[in-house]
Amino acid sequence: MNIVEMLLNYLDFLDIIFILAVILIIFVTFLLLLLHWSILNVKPTEDNKIIKPSKKMTKENNTNKQFHEIKVMEKINKIEIKGFYKNETKDNENKFILSEKTENINSISDKLIKNKNNVRDKNEELSIMFIESLSSLNSWKNNEIENQIFKETNWNLEKRENENDKEESLVYQYVFPQPKIEDNASYITIPISSSHSSVDKNFDYEDEEEQKEKLLSSYKLGICRIFDFYEENKLKSNIVKEINDKYYKVYSQGDPDLIKQKCRKETIPENYNEIVDKFKKEGYNIIGFSGKKMKINYVQSQRIERSKCESNMIFIGFVVYKIIYDDFKNAYS
Image (cartoon, rainbow, N blue to C red):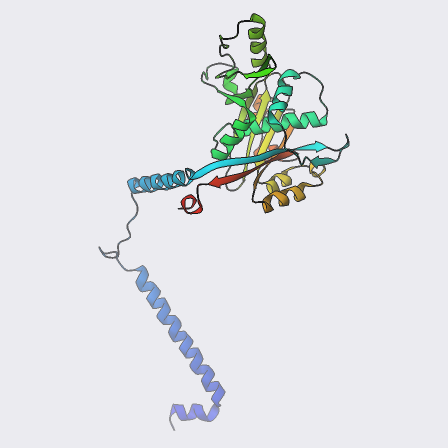
């Protein structure tokens, strides 16, 4: 009697099937391990050699990528800003409501210049914070959308050129309103390249020139620190200070849902979600804005953690806009 006959006498049919299955699994596993080992030990030849991109190739690829991105951006026909919608207090209470009418940004700037030192109520403070956030956040490292927002504010940008200046080197740049002088019932816009630029020689009256110079130096908002947008924190923020103010301020802009998370609950308007949903259904994009005052000095403003700046904020308002392309095919080619 051989070994096979002995096993058949002692084992039933199911036991035999089980043993054969185990042997098959072991055999297949061994073959896979052998195949894996052979692949790892294959020496590269001219045919299977892995070619790593050189620095030159990488640079060319990055250049091509940038060109493609620029090419897509050039297909934008225009950016239509529907309006600026400001947060405001309801009936002088602590409850907030988002205005359903677009704000006149130029009128806010005019009031800011003329009534700089006056005592303001909550709604006036929110208006000032709104215009400051719009102008300061959209004046640096801006894209086409932010360029348009900054243009709508009618503010000026003054970059620091002399870094050896002890006071002026503390800020990256200044932004300030473009003043308007009333002359014969019409407003004349004064273009400014810097806060110390010469006045227009077409004005003959000395009192008008003095008035313009006074307006030019009446309000300058210095951008002291920048927190740029990146994937892990999809906000753009900065720390600013008006030259004659004792407080520093932090402003942020970004997706309305993210801005909402950064703000104190009591400052979120009752109709926040309703307004956001309404504009999104109409095909518009929305940028949310938030801000707060901080009792810090310049050294502290440079050392404070970003997370502390972008928390416990006040909701300020929205910018609602739509990107209009030349046509669908060109925009996404």
